[in-house]
View 1 (tube, rainbow, N blue to C red):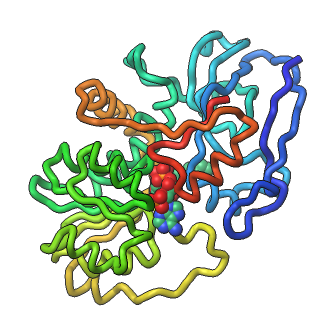
View 2 (cartoon, protein in one colour):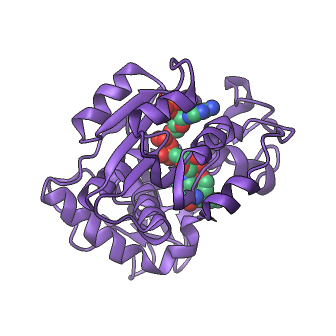
Length: 329
Ligand SMILES: NC(=O)C1=CN([C@@H]2O[C@H](COP(=O)(O)OP(=O)(O)OC[C@H]3O[C@@H](n4cnc5c(N)ncnc54)[C@H](OP(=O)(O)O)[C@@H]3O)[C@@H](O)[C@H]2O)C=CC1
Ligand SMILES: CCCCCCC/C=C/C=O
């Protein structure tokens, strides 16, 4: 008999998630039926979307939302042999039974020397987000100036590097000086700490006095209010995330942005990676190639131990991570 350990939601989050919002439960899993397989999580992902999506998708007592790279340890389904690795959205759990629905095999050309955890990061959902969110909405051209915030994180660090590959000048903002050093190491031209600058408007002007052609927004809120005013005419904006607002229970009122969009003739579009689900392989192939060529660097922020998963999640939301936040079971 296999016992699955799972993190469940004690109560809906109010404000920032807290350790007491999570409860670890043990569940004995039943024997497999025909067509079923048992998987064991190897790496789990903690992502910002868990905070906003929990409200609509979970009820109290449910397993927390999330994805993992998991190995088949027992199988009654010939299509999923023992030893195979898959990305699943089974939530925060060490073991789970599946009939194969929704399991995504790692790309077939996965190099032996690459950690499988990258299937949750640079070659997974965040990588695909950076790839299509930047290339299909911002449509960067050689010589464009690109701005990205939460720049040292999973998505932002890839957006900046893809911008460099496409010939942009890249400006990033992040929340610590350690992160600014990281951004310079991976090729950002300019970087500033949004927590310590005296004025966001001045920091944006100093980093690019001529303004910005492309803005990849992971943060929203006051940062976006300032960034919109620094856009060049006909600038393109990908609204990928709004992490500064995920803990708000009442939407804050901000400046009304229509005049900036109107008089600068900006293009601003929301992006959800699920819309690109059938084009994952194409992006993953290119991301793997850039990694192999040394053009795309990845960094992971590892939390060891399934029991530390809430701390890893809370820490990521607070900005403790450089690169992709990963839990090793
Ligand atoms: N639309 C889509 O399909 C997808 C959207 N996303 C979005 O992209 C964004 C980045 O996700 P991901 O790369 O996985 O996460 P990150 O690895 O970037 O981790 C989150 C980061 O957000 C920053 N942050 C937290 N609170 C604030 C705040 N109040 N103001 C500014 N920055 C803050 C922190 O960095 P710092 O130290 O710099 O503050 C933290 O490290 C999120 O908004 C997420 O929701 C992600 C995947 C798919
Ligand atoms: C229930 C799974 C939701 C995955 C959402 C991926 C898009 C992310 C949006 C914001 O972070």
